[in-house]
Image (cartoon, rainbow, N blue to C red):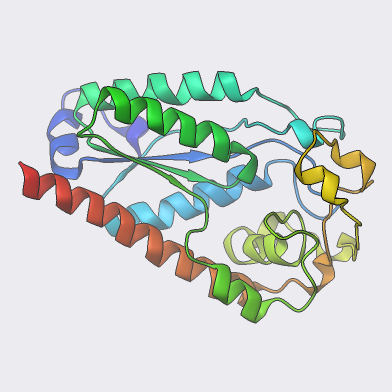
Amino acid sequence: MIFQHENSFEVKEKIKKSLVAILPIGAVEAHGPHLPLGTDNLLAERLAERVAQRTGAFILPTLPYGQVWSLKNFPGSINISNESLISFIYDMGVSLYEQGFRVFAMISGHLGNSVAMKEAARKLYADYPDYQIQYLFYPGVGKVTEEVREAKSAHSSYFHACEIETSYMLYLAEEYVDMSKALAEDPQIPMSADITPTPWEEFTSTAVLGNATLATKDKGEKIIEIAIENMIKLIEGARDGIKKAE
């Protein structure tokens, strides 16, 4: 259900029935020559659509900007501070709670938003302990990712415009991918980048962290479908817990 398409006369009863609001969160940032600036928005939106269809959740309008400090100097990137994101998410969460939602699931297409989402969730939980807030970023896909990956990961925890994220796009938003421009990169990310503020232009000129030429739709499907199943289980589990407590 698309929240912004509802009307004020009917939405109250629908909220009582659903209880779940999904907020797609993305970013606008460089993703190499083969993927668009709004890659993270597209991924979050397409994931949210599939999860909502199977959970009866409402999809909120996408929050299209994120914390992209590391890539803010690349052409096209738009950076929002963590402090701004925390405040925005918290205020939205309060409003949703007051409207009757009891499960607030954020589906992010951008890892850089994780700190803000987690902090906002903690603040909401502190003020509304009966509120289920989830910050979801491809949950439970570590094993299958390693199974389908052909190229070595450029980093132990994050990925970007590479074999994996490009495969996600080929599965969820293929019409926005230009594989003829895909790059095979091997950035050398220093250990210090994990413990100090490090703009990415210090180790990449393309924002591609790996071999995007190895991306396939099949790889994307294998990973994304597991992520979707896990998100559905988490959301439905949270809603079931609320209904049992009533």
